[in-house]
Image (cartoon, rainbow, N blue to C red; front, side):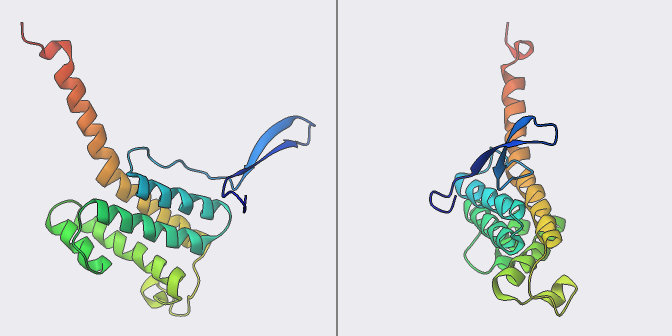
Length: 170
């Protein structure tokens, strides 16, 4: 809804005259609960933009979600490449993940400034597409899985292992 920024829900009839509930915009994926709130908010908005066929909005919000994550991960101040290199240097992310992040960063630059198309593979590109946005969302899913979800699952697994009766002292 443009007034309250909430989703719109509709009760509809399908071709068999059966009622069902739908909403706009429809998102196709959920955001991991392990994400810090600022990251989660930006990534949820990216998902909504993608579902609403607003790829440049999705690209920009993915870029915002990554920046929120970098701030949360205590990356030093500076431009995005410098921050990503620092995370590689302190072993927070892998070099391969940094390389993928650089590609996603270019998608955000195209959406924000209409530049970077040559780095994306098309020098004439000035607007992102749904496919571009989907690719950057895929990166964000992997990035957030690596830096937030997997460490939290491991922490929970270890806590459960330590709390199991098999580990109790007699």
